Length: 204
Image 1 (cartoon, rainbow, N blue to C red):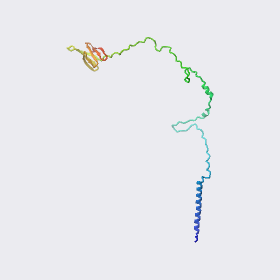
Image 2: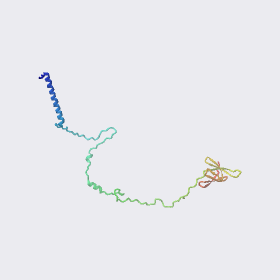
Image 3: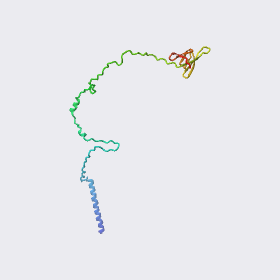
Image 4: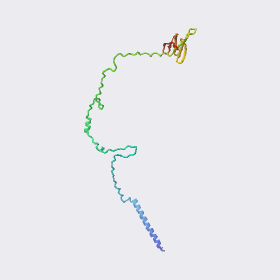
C-alpha cells in the first residue's frame, strides 16, 4: 500500500529538512570552534603610543599643602665621577691651628697657663674661736614680789600671757627654777642649759 503525499505535505517536509540542515551546520561550527583550539590567529594588539609631558616647574595643590618647586638644570651640573687627586689633596692637609687637633690621637695637649699669683692672699687669718653657742635668754619678766609674815618671799613672774607665783626653789613652766628672790632682782636658772641669769624688777 503506497502512501500518497499531497502538495502541502511536501512543502512541510522540505522546510523541515532545510531547518535540520541549518541546525546541524551550526552545531558542527560550534563544536569545531570549541574543540579545535581556535585555528584563526588572534588579532594583534593596537600599537601603544607614548606621549611625553612637558616638565612642570610648579604643581598646583589644594589649600594648606606645600607646593613643590622643581629647579631645572641642577641634575646636569652634578658630576658623579670620583676624583682621586682631590681626595689625596684633602688628606694631605695638615692642622695648623694653635690648639689641640681633635682628629689626631698623637696631637700634643694644650698647655695650660700657670698661675702667676696665689689664689688667696698670704697672711694671718683671724681664727674664729669655735665653741658651743651661747644659751638663749630666759623669757620671763619679774614684775613684783610678796613678803608675808613668815619671811618666805613669793615672786610674780610673767611668761607671755601666763602669770606665775613662785617661791625660792620652785620650778616655773617646767623649765625655770627660782634660785633667789631679792627686792629689785631675781635669780633664775634655765634647767636644760644649766644657765643662771638675773632678771631685774620691771615696773609696770
